[in-house]
Image 1 (tube, helix red, strand yellow):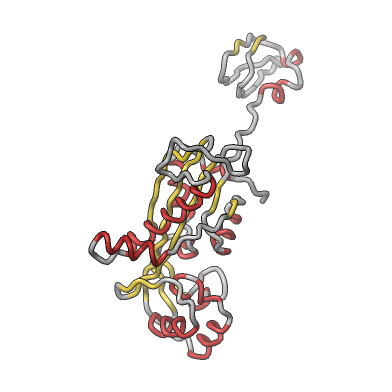
Image 2 (cartoon, rainbow, N blue to C red):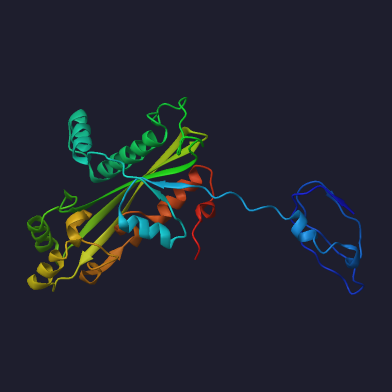
Length: 283
């Protein structure tokens, strides 16, 4: 028997105790060999080592997005993108000469956030500066995927972001109570290889959200008083205190949280990586 490392195999035997077959990858030649002559360490000696984990940078400090990724087995490195969302959206609308559609807004802001973090990681070299190299810690070239995300809620064609104040939150809840709106979540994923920003892919996911029609004013006041709805798109959550006020969701529920996991998986694969390569968190 002879072999040159890096193989996978399946082993069976007949009633004489002889090896029947091997399924192999790599250069290997195995003759009909009695099982007793195969070293016990063979499987350990020639099994492929596990692939390196792909690092994911999350261009967001959203607790909901972080919790969602953790639940999917991913512990990202979180970085605040420091993007003026209103200024970016207004500038794009002014340049286009028209009001941006909801899917355009979330895609634009997701891209801006991801590019801002790439710029931070590469020391000023953004995605358009592919020739510039940077490091994530001053010594090792930045590697991995950078994810930017943004969400807005739409009701009657009007785009609603974060209310920021209790008064606006109360106004929105009294408007959307008993009705159905759309939650748009944009995603932008940039690949970093050896300190260089290479490819980028983006996508938008949409989910329909229907609110209960029997929510009382006192319930709304109590919910708003918690402060939770002030800093989330649409002034509601599905993964915390706001969940009991939502009667149904049509579409991927993680979209409503602010990051569609199926959409992210597709983007990861479009960049040539496998989803399990992001798993770096113990179950």
